[in-house]
Length: 249
Ligand code: FPP
Image (cartoon, rainbow, N blue to C red):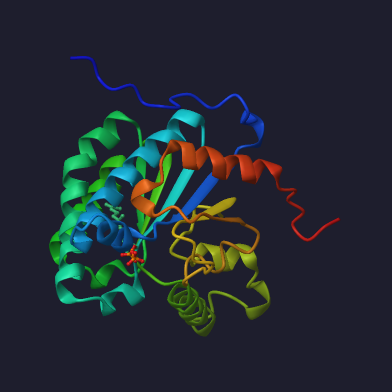
């Protein structure tokens, strides 16, 4: 039996390789609605969401995008029913365990950002293992925001910097953007050039508030489990039509 060919395996000809975003961020919204439309329980939407994320990661690698950051679980998501939160934590853990070998084979470096201390111990152990094992991989940098909140991230950076000032290691006048960035969860990850949000909501939802100061935003009505390479192609076409000015003329 021959394997089903992946559609759009190579970078589509209408995209300019030189002007691809280096770093793409995604808010993977609409899993629950996707499941409801299929007459399935919400958790099936999350399961299919993992498949969509895995294919996007491969697509980024195939097409030459250097970094992908995905919003997997926000600090606000704890407010969902216990069964759904529990399912998501177990899903993250299982996917990490299953995919580690593949990530090594594909040279992916995985990093988790967020308040990881509050996650279940068994998930934290998988997170630490996957980060340690992939640390020296030189391929695509895949960042997963888990128990992440942009405001909380900024607050914890302020606390850490204030402590350094209090202890005399840092002068207030030395606090600049570079110092601040080093204290964010995303230190070393860099700012996204493009944010994609699925399911039509026009919100940042507390995601990468500092880092997205100059990111281009792309919102599609497509629900996350249906976000495929053709959809990503459209997002990149829209991105390449933008003129990024960073506040200049
Ligand atoms: C939002 O859809 C989606 C989530 C809160 C979970 C996203 C997580 C994944 C796709 C799994 C990622 C896995 C790893 C290992 C990184 P929603 O439930 O808010 O959908 P709705 O708005 O239609 O209700």
